[in-house]
Length: 388
Image (tube, rainbow, N blue to C red; front, side, top):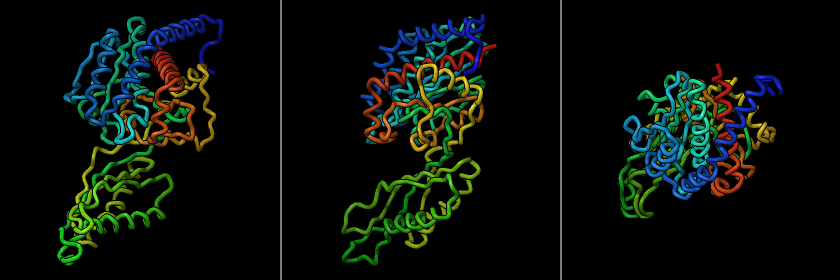
C-alpha cells in the first residue's frame, strides 16, 4: 500500500476523502444501476446511440453539470462539465453496443462507472481547484469515436483521463493492440452459374483466395499480431456467379509502427484475390488506426491501491486476464494526456467479452458492485493523482 501513515494528519485527510467519495457513490447507486440497466435493455450501435447519449446527459445535468449535447458536431457525443478549476480530470463514457450481441462488452457499466465517479469528484471541485469533465464517446466498437473527437480538439489539456472497462476478472494495466479496421469489397461480374459460367467474374473466389493467403501468412506473422475478419456478403443466389462480395477485417499489432508494416503484407493477400480472380478490389478504413496504450504509472499504482482496498483482487491466472489485450480508441487519448484504462472484473470467467454469456453478466449484483467499486476507485485515484 502507498500513501500516508494511518493516524497522521495526512492519513486522516485521506480517510475523510475516502469516506466522502464512498458516501457520494453510495447515494447514487440506485440511479446508476437504473442507468446501466436501461442502457443494457436498449442497445444501440456506434454513431446511433441517441437514447444512450440523452440518458447520460440527463443524468449529469441532474447533478449540476453543464452539458454540451451533440458535442463538436457529433450527434451522439456529449461533454459534461462541473467546476472551473485549473486542474482538469476527464472521465470517459462509452455506450455503443455490438451487432447481434447487445452490451456484450459492458459499455453500459462503463457509462455508469464514469457518471458515478464524475459526480463524486464534483463535490471536491471548488476546494481542490478541479474541473470535472465527462465525455460521452460514440462508436468505440470499430468506429473510432474518440479519435474523431480528438481530431476536433477534445481531450487536449486534460491532466488525467480515466475509465474502467468490465471484464471477466480484474486486470489493472491496459495492454491493448494497435488496430486498423477495413471494409473489403470485390467487384466481379454476374452470370448464370450453369448456363454461362464462363461469362462470370467470381467475386466469392476472390475472397476465398485472399483468406487462403491470409491463413498461410499467419505462420510467418510476428508474435503479438492478429489478423481476423468476417465476410458479410458472399453472393445472392447459388445459381448466379457472385458479382460482389464484402467483408470487414481487423489487423492488430503491438504498436502503430508494427501495424503499418503488417498492413502492407495483409493488403497484398487481398490484392492476390483480385489478381487471381480478375475482380476489382476496394479497401476502405472504417476509422483511423487505434493506438497502443500509454499508461500513467503513478495513476495505475493509485488505482491498484484503492481497488484492492475495496476487496478487488488482481491475482487471477494470466489466461483469465487477457481482455487487457483488446484494442481501444482510448489508446489514442493516452498518447496526448496521462491516462489509465483498468479492467474491472465481474467474476464470470469463462464467460468473456463479446459473448452472449458475458452480456448476461453485465446486469445483476456483480455488475452493480463493479459500478460501485469502479466509480469509487477512479474518483480516489484522480484526487490523489492531482493532489497539489
